[in-house]
Length: 185
Image (cartoon, rainbow, N blue to C red):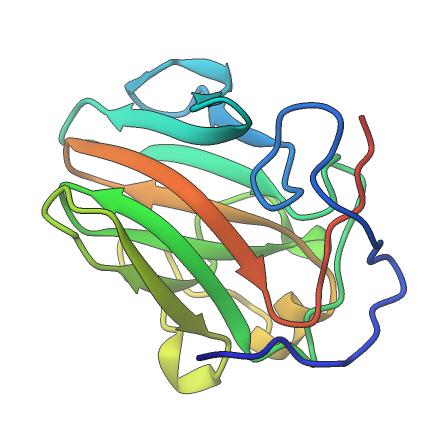
């Protein structure tokens, strides 16, 4: 069992789910419009059961596709994850993909630190993804970032999911150690 750290984060907040659709208080799960996806743009949150939500998206082609989670629930926000051990994610994926940790100071472009998200062969699983530097790498095809991983953790704006193969994706949980996103909508 993993216990969340007691480290206080200045922009974290207390309470339950947000009043608007969210998964673990993350309200902005977005199809970015980059690559062939279904849906093509906008929120990918859909009702799950009577009281919750799930995020669903399909990457449709053998070309880069992108899906974004804004950590502070709005584009302008950022989170200091420098003391976080990592995050738990409950998801299903029919193929491998990657998560880019995108800092506010270097938001644009593909040259980001990434960690692999293994295929679950369509089964729902819960996995821990560490922020330890040896768990993050770069993809030669997308380029190498000009900043260290520690800088990306300092001013993290979003987790950006990227893949280059058709993939059916669903997300049911995302809990970041030591960080609780504020509800902004």
